[in-house]
Amino acid sequence: MSSGLAAFAPIVVVPVFNEAETIGEVVAAARAHAPVLVVDDGSDDGSAAAARAAGAEVLRHPRRLGKGQAIRTGVAAARSRRASVVVTLDGDGQHDPGDLTAVLGAARGAPRAIVVGSRLAEAGVLPPDRLNAIRVAGFFVNWASGLKLEDTQSGYRAYPVTLFDEVELRHGGFVLETEVLIAAAARGWQVREVPVQAIPRARRRSRFRPLGDGAAIGAYLAGRVVARWAREAAAAGRAVVIGGSNLHRAAGAGPADWWCHPRRRRAAAAAGATLAAPALLALLALQALVPRWLPDVVTPLVRRLCSQARLDAMDETECQTFMTLAVPSEPPR
Image 1 (tube, rainbow, N blue to C red):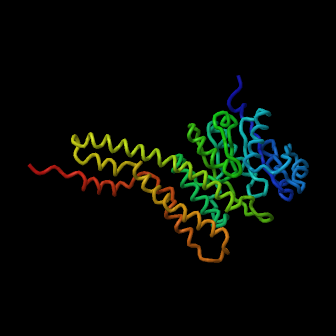
Image 2: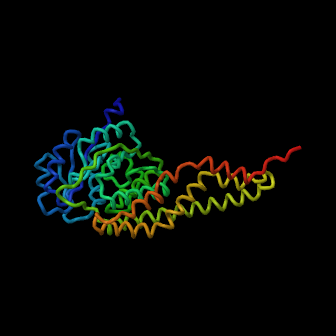
Image 3: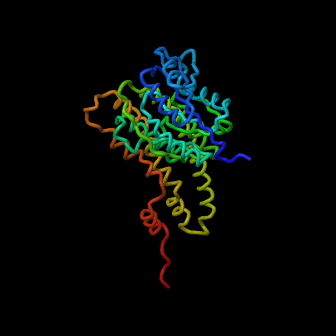
């Protein structure tokens, strides 16, 4: 009978579009850890030949279909090759293949978890607009799904292949990487983070388009946030009905319980960020377009409104103060 360790069979999938300058180095370094499959998404610069020369197996799309479809192609190929884990990393050199040791180690120890390589240990490497977008996305992923992740937008990940037996992905492009986290959480899968190095792009700009791709991710998250608010409204309605019927049995306990309940506290924090979201998104788009030397007024707002710490447990001091006011002490006899 084979052991769990013997069944661990990773494959590295690298989606590529016109990365001939860097893909050879990425493939050569990644092959020290696992077989490498490059999905060439319609490149016209010789990326496929460079990847093949470095030792990768290459699959080609006849035209550009987007990162999401490239990942789907890679997962399907990994399944047909009986891989148990798919690790995705970018072909432009921004991800260090040396971090595969940590990513694969975490994946081996957690067979029912997505492992995300978090770049925020060295957040200064990322441009301010990208860093703020990551923080805003992380806040709303947390609110929509309960996942507390620092870097929901990292493409450096390990996916168990069996995840895709349970999770049906409907979106493409960069949205897929957000969708899979929320869909996996809804199915009871864990998501873990390990720190990875963020390498500044020296030769090419990111394929991520702040306006187009950012807007698509924002629209997807907006739908999930609306669904979460619908659930919160239903829960609040039930609490009012139940609390009202029990109020005569526990004077003051109903409102105090409501005020101190972590769900109410999370909703209050999320409400401020939700109401500010249109303005925040406009500011993020503007920050991506303006020169970097201009004063940064966006980062303080993002840190204040979209800190995931605001979605954590209630502040005990505030709760105790309210309960003292809401529940009168027993009169002296």
